[in-house]
Length: 216
Image: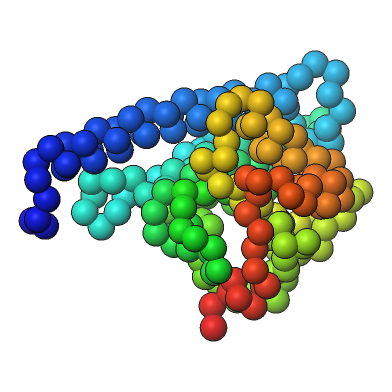
């Protein structure tokens, strides 16, 4: 075991436990906000819920610490008839490892907000981790949005996308609404990236070029 006094070790574990409790509160708040936004009476979103949240998590090599957790909410186009999920709207919280290893950025906990064609599954290695696999459809828009495919303002499910925020920049429910919920639904509604993810807003991660983000 590494050289460390008992008091310091106990304080480290106490901090991790406290952080975990705070993260559970954040997760609950985000899940509730997403569902409330989707189910708000009178909304005109072209999509509806297609099921419950799907969760996935990952432990470090010691199996003592969670490095990432994720929740994915299935969506389908509005209309009659039974339809399969077309996209998954959700978030991935990364505290350690490749989920925070954005090239050119100081390593710190991140919240990734996404709309993907599949739910995050760490067991199947389907999650956001850096560097990204090379993909001809991949692009970075305005330094703030990762996309796979071509965005079409007329079609909510035209492509997959992700934006990231510094977790410690989100301090209250208003921050979650302003920087997570509203931007995500603005993008789904076809809003321009610059308006949905405004320049200068502290919590948003600014990505490097797409070549710097992808594997060599």
